[in-house]
Amino acid sequence: MDERREESRVDGGDDEATVSRFVERFAAQLVQAGMTRMPARVFAALLSSERGALTSAELSEQLKISPAAVSGAVRYLAQVNMVSREREPGSRRERYRVQGDQWYTALLERDTMMKNWQATMQEGVDRFGLDTPQGRRINDTLEFFRFLDEELGSLMRRWNAHRAERLDG
Amino acid sequence: MDERREESRVDGGDDEATVSRFVERFAAQLVQAGMTRMPARVFAALLSSERGALTSAELSEQLKISPAAVSGAVRYLAQVNMVSREREPGSRRERYRVQGDQWYTALLERDTMMKNWQATMQEGVDRFGLDTPQGRRINDTLEFFRFLDEELGSLMRRWNAHRAERLDG
DNA sequence: TCTTAACTTCACACATTTCTGAAAACAGCG
DNA sequence: CGCTGTTTTCAGAAATGTGTGAAGTTAAGA
Image 1: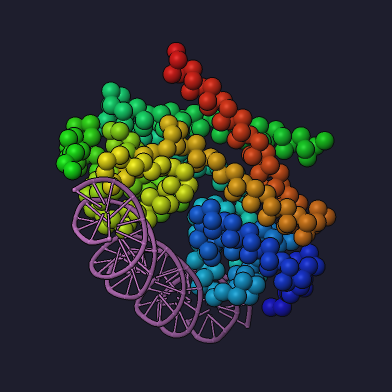
Image 2: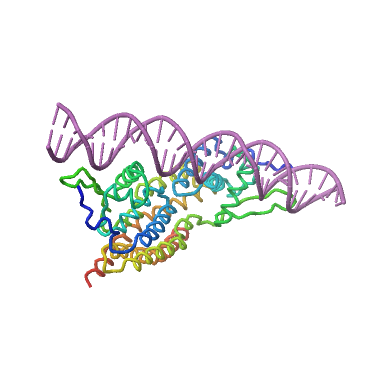
């Protein structure tokens, strides 16, 4: 039952207020980027935790939110693949872990979104035709998204190379 | 006073419903990308207009919104440099025009945002130190944003080259 | 099978956001 | 200098979003 060995201390030995300041600032940034508040705070807390994983109760206490709020936030985060759920053997507790080393690549994996933009712009071009000013204007945008779509792929390849080099060297 | 030559017909000769469908779909996409509804709709309408410019009254009528809503939307769009205001000489009306051929580059010019992310991540690294797991985790993110910042610059340069080629050839 | 800790769902209260109508401010024109 | 068409401001109504408490569900252990 009692397994709060280092859990009662904030991870890393920093004081709570200090960690909290970072968590909230980070969360605010995620909110600005379009994430809703609770998932943002939960994710920030997980990323700032020593093990990259916390239980529902820990999150609830650290962020001063209800278990219901944790549940909702985690559901969202799991859905978009930013955290995974782990069952702790021999306990009813669940543990939520930040998914992968490179969570931030999700920020660019707007693959679906990119396709949506392209479809919308294509509709506009079809609708108006390239013989109209607005058709050409929209086509320009379409071309850009196609370009961007390709470029982001090679960008991520370069990042992985860059990162591997840094970690090896 | 009466200068509704082709303004009463929807630009391009398409029927209103068809244009409206595209405008709303495009606007929805902008909303998903973080823009608020009214600015999104106004911008979509301007981009889909033949001349790339409409008066307040035209926007109000086409989108079925109050002049107040147009005013607010346009104020925002002008602030973020996506539309410019023009005074029509010999009239009290104002005309709003989509700014520039390449409005969409604004989507990537998250320059300020990028710096904010970097500052936040730097704070996290300082806070935790590279000798902690969470410090290293956050540092990884920081490195990514630095990389991304540089890459987006060269990406835009490639886009401009690509585009120039397409328009010339 | 029963008990109970843990998580989830749901209805609702509270907060925030968004759009409108009305009044005020502005600017061209006589 | 006042008149009038147009845009802006502002208080508040309406719509949305968000987090909680309480009830419901699940599953570990006896």
